[in-house]
Length: 71
Image (cartoon, rainbow, N blue to C red; front, top):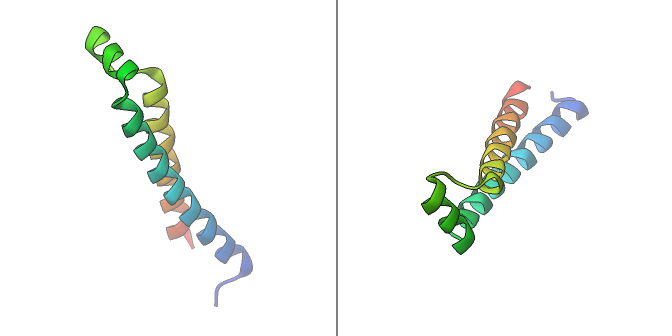
């Protein structure tokens, strides 16, 4: 039988997974913007904003998976 705390952790995990996927998708969409493509053409790398969304999305996703599987 699962405790209320365990259920809360699973729900939090699911929310973080969905948030992580959303942030990664948002970052991908930002990477296609004109300003980002121009920066990428000049410097050869993505903008800091795009990388922030990718990193935050990945971190949120993996923490969410951990919290969901933990219990």
